[in-house]
Length: 170
Image (cartoon, rainbow, N blue to C red; front, side):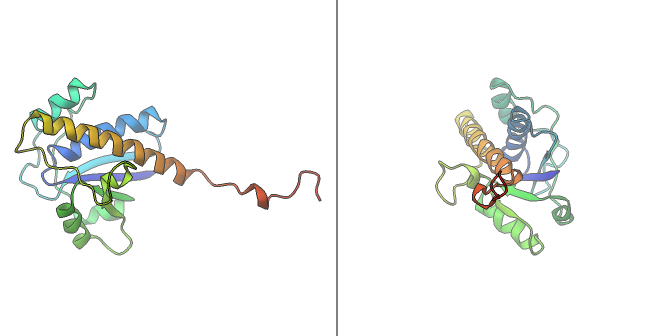
């Protein structure tokens, strides 16, 4: 079982949108029984609150259900329970890398989107309008597809046919 945690600042916009989308993409690819996904924020001021209404509305209008989400704050002890911690921006990347033990895999979520430039972030839509939430949805859908492709490749052993003995035993 691979365990993934998606992290943004307050866990009410970007990371719960990414969690909701990634769960769907994993299910669509038949990996939902092999990968668990959750989300959190680096800050705890929204802990216990539902997803931002604009995020929820954007997801809902595109066929996703994020209604069960409740915000929570990332805890350092979670590194031992997660294989991959994916953050939405450089500020959260720095914050979690300071907490991370050696060997913890912490990286930008958009690093899995092959079309995104190196270092690309998922911008915080909180202080903007509805279009920002739609942009976030587009970004997390692309990154989710790329992550699923990465996980599939990581799970599939590569077979080197040149190293196999010939079928006739020679």
